[in-house]
Image (tube, rainbow, N blue to C red):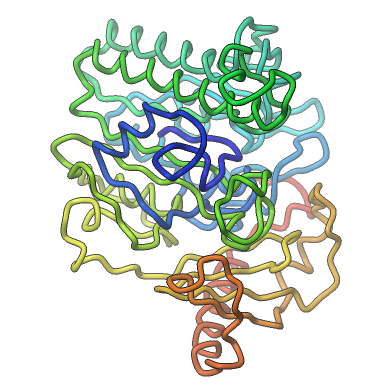
Length: 435
């Protein structure tokens, strides 16, 4: 699982972006690329919770991006993660890169990635600090590593390659799951000058931003070369996506909004599935899909029983194997983010319904857990309707023209919302002590 951080819908080459990404483009050409692929949330921590559980992030305990020092929030231990599913099926598991689903602090005891199913982990709380260059905040299996020399994406690739080598030596026949969550292009950004210069001056932020993506593409190429060297490339399912849209409005295409907002620019991201011999090459799909579908899809592709809980995502296997007529999404895609205006969004077929909160709430970037009771009981109003097939930029609100569709979608949205809030953890009452 290859995940970028804050990479926009129109950043990489195969999505019409300005960055040279031959490796990512190669994965797309050799597999299936979704034209309408979605993050789990418009910001990082909740999107990652959705990816790793197949469930809406609020069910999993994550409302917004996590600051461990001031919040009790974390990915709940009761959740069954993708790593736990695969480990139960006999896979070795490793996480390398950004985590941002909660780590312990001096005042707060929170689970670590090994408690969520990973045999090996090499991670940061949130961003690479002080930047992507020479980061000093990585932790390996609970032990701080100290300052490292190099760029974050390459250091993450180094760790992944070293782990694959050790795994091959110790357990040559055991399959593995490698979860690679890059920090790039999340700020604070840094990239090698020789890469940045391909896109502009070395001190130009847009050029550095592009350089971080280019550098990540080169890191992914090293990972693929290792898979080739191990002789497992043809038998490896590779998924590439981003955790949310870009913070740069020039990198979301012609979509409305950007990171942090439940408009298309904040939640639509690249989505590529590559598995030679199993997923046909050169396929571009228009059906909506997203990170919420990753866990059920992997279970479907590998014929592994999914967790016996409510999954908000659907199994994309029919779409990925040329049987699109048999695909049925059991529940529309749904997003909730308290700081966003609109606060909720739902995608059903060609249509998107968005709603605004009908209660007072701070727009502060840093989430405060005292807001949770209001979020759990809050209601919505001022619904807007958009036909994303005809109007991907969400410029024409059709609510007044199609009141019956608005009402039907609103009722469905409210049912999904009620189900999620029933599962939601109220962190302001204290830490999570239950599996």
